[in-house]
Image (cartoon, rainbow, N blue to C red; front, top):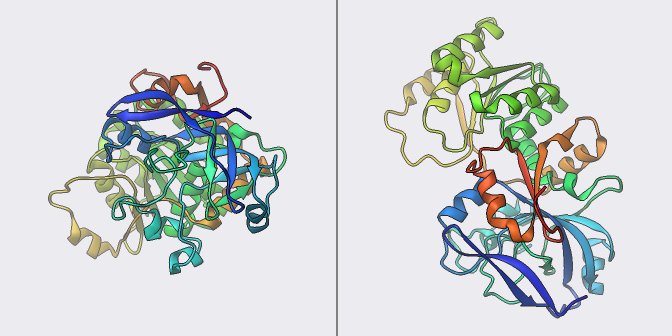
Length: 376
């Protein structure tokens, strides 16, 4: 094992540099992960273009790798051994608060960089904090005693395990938050990696009807949605909002859907308004993820009249991750089709821009492979 670790470091808006960091000395309750895959999502694209911090950051919060070295206390605490493949959640929680005892690490104050300047979270924490390796865009990543790790079953490849984060989000948002289940009628807006993961989660849970909407440029993704279990897909760009709503009513016999999962990630107010109208007459659930700066004339009255429950989505729980990994291991769905692109460490900038659509490629999930030489 070398004396230094190579990492791709975000040094400013839209800028990445390859830097070397010293190989950390491990405490007895720490470990070192040899990173095999660091997934890239839409949040990475936003934070790359407009970083919330001026400090240098090793990005990468969807991380899978092999335990390269581990202290005895770490292996006893986590039940892992050196050489074992694991998926690492990006939260580094306190393990003492109420949220942590529930396995809801995303709500722990120790992980919330928005309110806690000393928060620890992979892909977000400054590389200036020793031992520096706080992100997956590196050959190795440091795991403290309170890292949250999940064992990857034999037979699940590193790149397939790299889909665990969007898959766990899909399970968390669709099943735990929105309550999709047996005989549910679900509308999923946006066929990106989160939306496609929700198709799988809803189908696995027994939903009787799954409708997925997208735009003209999502043609390949909409077709993949069908392969993963969607009953109907709608091109809202071609049909228009009114036409899409009419089609949803035709499909549901005028009843509307029980649940709307908005995965359009800040595409404006139109998807939310369509979702409200597409819900059944009484008691539906609208789940929104992404950021929306303003929403003038929000139709509160319509929500009240239809008794709609509105929820927001962010992150995942420990339980959702375990179910996601089990789903990947089951082989029931062709989830490997979500992994469309991979890049080496030197191409981190290109990888992020590919996810952001700057290269005009049909991309769903991009993997950064720190030990890979070039793109594929």
